[in-house]
Amino acid sequence: MDDPRDDDQIRVVIADDHAVFRQGTRELLAREADIRVVGEAANGEEAVRVVRERKPDVAILDISMPVLNGIDATRQIKEQCPQTRILILTAYDYDEYVVAMVDAGAAGYILKTANYAEVANAVRSVYEGEAVLDPAVARKVWSHFTARSRGGRTGSRTAEALSERELEVLLHAARGASNKEIALALSVSWRTVQTHLRSIFTKLGVASRTEAVVKGLQEGWLRLEDLS
View: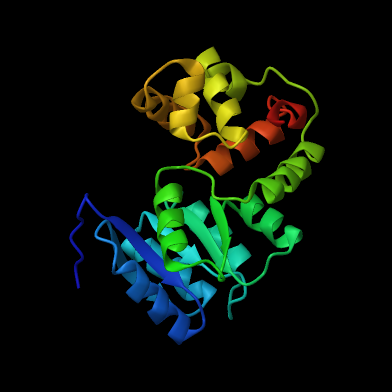
């Protein structure tokens, strides 16, 4: 059945192998006027198919799923539907899982111990392109990608494509600042910050702050010491 788009709502797909948890998450999100669940999946392979068919704004995935795990499902979704933001909702809080999910293209990572308001706010945040990572965890994630980078600013074509102001915005975003905090620091409006972030995402071929920071660290023109 066709699902006409409502631009006032964030379209969400939920993928989890526990039917009761999927139903509970759906019912919780149904309380939010600006969020609409447009599909569900019981395993990773089905999640990829449903996302490809429904083209949601946000896909909520667990890590441990049958047929195809959340890491591989995330990677395939980002390859096939790069504009869909991935929010990981899982019981696993191991650093290596967080790193693996961010490496695969996830924009956010929260635990199933979160209450419904936290889940709804996380959906909104990743939809807006913001990172949803605990600051302490984020530091470890950025350290991982820095270790894999080429070292130092490389003056790459990608870096040159960003303006000086866009690099400033990305740096503040990498430090965990909100759009309003970035606007205050740069003495511009928050709408101007949003415009800069959209330009950054377009130039880097990403859909979230998390992906943009990873790209910057991998290229070597964002350094871990810059983020402190």
